[in-house]
Length: 387
Image 1 (cartoon, one colour):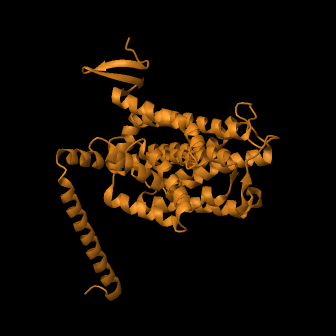
Image 2 (spheres, rainbow, N blue to C red):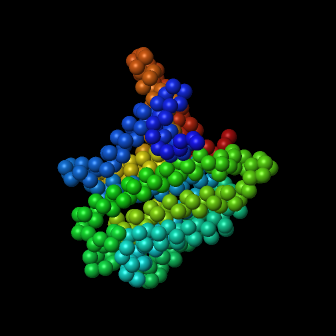
Image 3 (cartoon, helix red, strand yellow):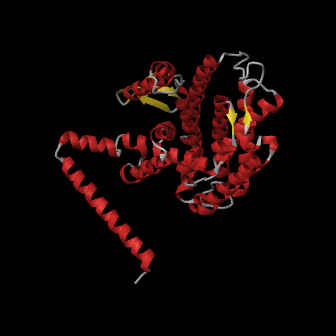
């Protein structure tokens, strides 16, 4: 019987580590994964020693990165761009807050499951109504449903209107974790560790999903829906399932966000700009990779936090990063660092011939001149019209 348990295996003369069925890492990849995990688990201690690193900010980045991992299932595999994923993030967050504030539900696990369940139901409905359309119309429909939900929550006193709701149930003013009422510091650290564990499990589940026959079918749908339909793939049902799965990730992230922040308001969790942030995180990290959206979430939240400390125009920082990304690193952070990525290729070229930096500067200058010339032409057309 073939051994499918985790452990060391040999493939084509190379030693690999089997993590789970179908997932085998080289020793180098295993070492990198372990370093990454150790870093994540050591962050509370690092934050305690460094005044510039705040655990709450990093925790928030991990949570938003989880939502971006879910959205990436749609973007990467079905080529559908949702502008309304904040609806599921916000549903998870508000379900948690309502149960805690109105019904005094105190258990972490119950609040998390309820947030995921309501986000799933919301996605089943919105997906059923939106996925009859593709492309721009799908994006606009998801945006419209997200804004409807935002307006509903903003206008109803039951949801706390624009002030939002606290997530402070029980005499301890915090959710209990597996029956334990913890003091603030212990609660913050344990919530962070639980989030990391949930993110790792979610990544493994997502990896299994996208490498299954279902994931292959989604890829086929993303390449050509008509051809996928002709070869017998139930396109609408599969895309609907992918939409719902992506919302489960959003709901989980929203519920975690509510329990970490202990207060939710409609602006930070339901407004359409939050949907844009989640989409941007996936692109920033590299939407063609599994880990990219998670990395993008952490990087963007850190950038926004640092930007607030540096300048009043911190929102412009996001725009500058987006410009640098589009012109310099279209594969995103993780995509550029992968083998064959732009950064790895550039490092290899520089190692072989350091003089290559001259041709890079020349190419960069030429691109800037071309872009400036094109902008001038566009302005002329806008002002004087086409001649």
